[in-house]
Amino acid sequence: MRKDVRILLVGEPKVGKTSLIMSLVSEEFPQVVPYRAEEITIPADVTPERVPTHIVDYSEAEQTDEQLSSEISKANVICIVYAVNNKKSIEKVTSHWIPLINDNTDKDSRVPVILVGNKSDLVEHSSMETILPVMNQYTEIETCVECSAKNLKNISELFYYAQKAVLHPTGPLYCPEEKQMKPACIKALTRIFKVSDLDNDGILNDNELNFFQRTCFNAPLVSQALEDVKNVVRKNMIDGVCDNGLTLKGFLFLHTLFIQRGRHETTWTVLRRFGYDDDLELHQDYLFPLTLKVPPDCTTELNHNAYLFLQSVFDKHDKDRDCALSPEELKDLFDVFPYMPWGPDVNNTVCTNDEGWITYQAFIHIRSFAVETQQCVCVCPLRSTVTRDKKIDLQKKQTQRSVFRCNVFGDSGSGKSGFLQAFLGRNLTRQNTVSEEHMSYYAISTAYVYGQEKYLLLHEVFPDFDVLSDTDLACDIVCLVYDASNPHSFEYCARVFKQYFMDTKTPCMMIAAKSDLQEAKQLYALTPLEFCRKHKMPPPQAFTCNTADAPCKDIYTKLTTMAMHPHVTQADLKSSTFWLRVSAGATVFAVLGFAMYRVLLKQR
Image (cartoon, rainbow, N blue to C red; front, side, top):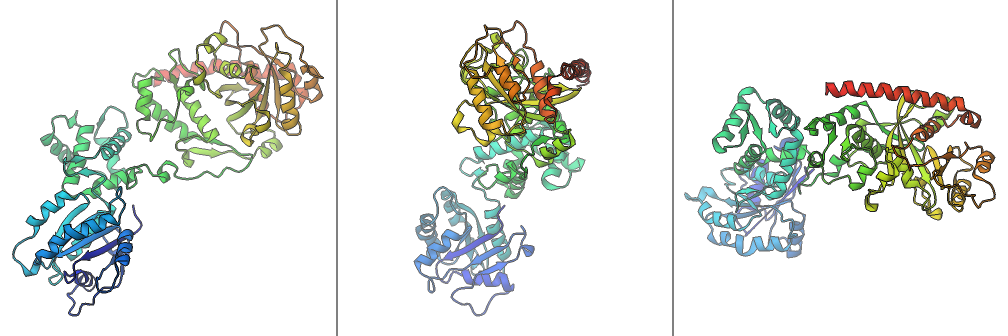
């Protein structure tokens, strides 16, 4: 909502503009009236909406046309004052003032107008019969108020309506000609209904209505009030109430009723509570409520509250309880988002079920990936954790982190994409069914190290040697992939290591991909094994995704272990006992994890 309101009073001379302002301030009719009142500011604590209000007068005798144009452009709402006993001043509303205002304001964002019929104490009839056709002709006119500066009639109401026209405008919500809400308003309220429908059954039950009421107005509805609301809907709509709960049609009808009865503030309170601005767009402060300050060498991860929240979101939309989101269920989930944050490549970033649908585990992986790479539509700091500095992890020789990033380097055709997809359990045959435009440069899945569940995020770095960015280089472990059957493939890995990682403490591992093919002698001064020995790296790891079943995942466990323990010496990394402990831990935990998953699945 606006932080202040600027009200401008215009109209023909001697219609009582200045008298209205002075009567409001002094609460009595002034005996001596100047040509023009000085601008006054009404403090927030004495206005109904608790917003500072600036009231500006206009005098043809004291101000130029240029000054008037300037004031019109600065005003949030304009009151066109006419005298109810002066026919000429009424005619000037349409022949002069409304065209003048429109000429000095943006066509796409008309300033709201209030028609003010002053001097009602001098006549016994109302001017409303003459004014109503004018109100119907010009949509920017919010309302008309008849008042008397002399009798103090409707003076406070006049300025309240002017303030209300700015803070709770009708224009974005409702079309008077069609007598229905505008599409943007319906879309926003539909999203609010879906967010408030906690069990996703298409009905707001009493508990959900009370939750909605507390969220928007900080107070619950008593039982009788709930029934009264539903009874109003029942009397006007056949399908507005179902199973004693409010349907979407009933919810929209109520807000239409609020607007038609002049209670725009009710609908605006709801809209603003759910993040909408005056143009019915989700405000940036709502989408990004706080900024997480992440120091160098620190990362962000989801905390326990985030996992609970994500589980509730997944359960809400997994209507058939198969622990996977079908395309329809996924679309339903993202209906409340300002835009679809995932593209078709997401199905090749995480593990999916046999139908290619996002499973619960994959859903968690995607959100972990989004936080790690800061690609969220909205990352709430209350649900994120900033990890401690990696230097402290090195000193203490242990880490509390759960997500580790592995950047994968390699020349074109070396097998990087296959290496990523194999992490998702996909062999070469299945990978060949994926279209090129749907391939992903990321893959995230679970790895188990010493019985601990960790997330490993693989990022395929585009093989442009000369334009590697800080993001390409920032990671927990480097994976250098070369095609063992291509004699020219290893040289690229050697160059990347020597230029970017040889003098860092980032652990590196060499991967000899396509090991199912005939191995070729690499045309480089050192063999891959000699190169690894010289630079104190583990020996090259043979890898292939050309398997009958899902590719072996031992290599990913090794990568995660090295990322977790960058302090481990090369002698330890070469030790078969070290890797045997890691693999055994992963196997035992995988068996226990599957058993626990079945138990949790039954509970859900």
